[in-house]
Length: 198
Image (tube, rainbow, N blue to C red; front, side, top):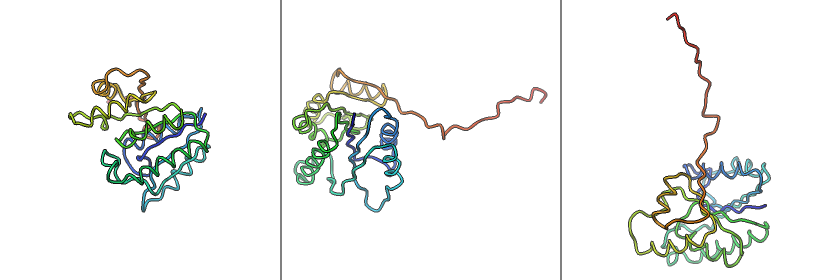
């Protein structure tokens, strides 16, 4: 099974979302992962990309990524966004993708969702980290809710994130919680012997 991961946030850029997605991709051993992400100017991604490819996966770093993935993408940079949609569709076909995962959910990727569903006929999963779910009422909220409900699966990084997603969209079927893990390199052995004579 080939999984296509679409995300702007991916190492070597730093952050919790980046690490969560990188580790999730690296530990999805039963499937082959294809990552589509933004090419970072002035940053070497060679080490990260080599680790991704070593596991049999593939990574596409696109240089012509839209500069704004919020609601403004519709009128500020429609051509780069449409080009991104076309590239993703072509990669989906050439890599024989079975599942599409949107690794974080800015507004532009919600606009991409109906295009993916219509053109690829593949199931789409959304991963929520919390900060992309609006808590302030806005006119665009109803549009955002409608697009979110078009997905087939929802992955939340915590029970808290699932709760705020439920408050925003109502109860969604196909929701899963995948808490971030902790790498063993952050643990160290501690001498627990007790000197009872002290």
